[in-house]
Length: 104
Image (cartoon, rainbow, N blue to C red):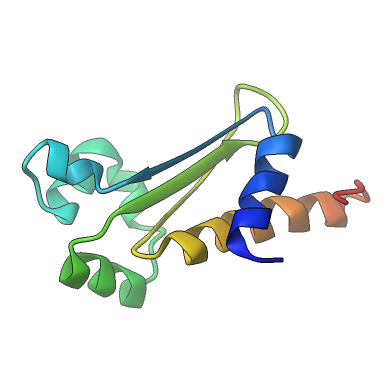
């Protein structure tokens, strides 16, 4: 399944899904400044290699979903849209598979 199909699966199986790219540029910030202001805890979850690429490419991709309710959500930061969507898809579909929920 390619990333567009994975995003479509997320869209149809989750309460809410969102994707943003380069929000930091709207605020005239660097990737690092934006994440420190917006989601400092999220910085701790980013792989160091991915983080280096995000900064080097000045690219901030954020994809998130509320899988089952409007309360709890999952979020992935990356420099690449396809990789971000795939990680989120794997996390949510994988969790549902582990719980025995059909995600077809």
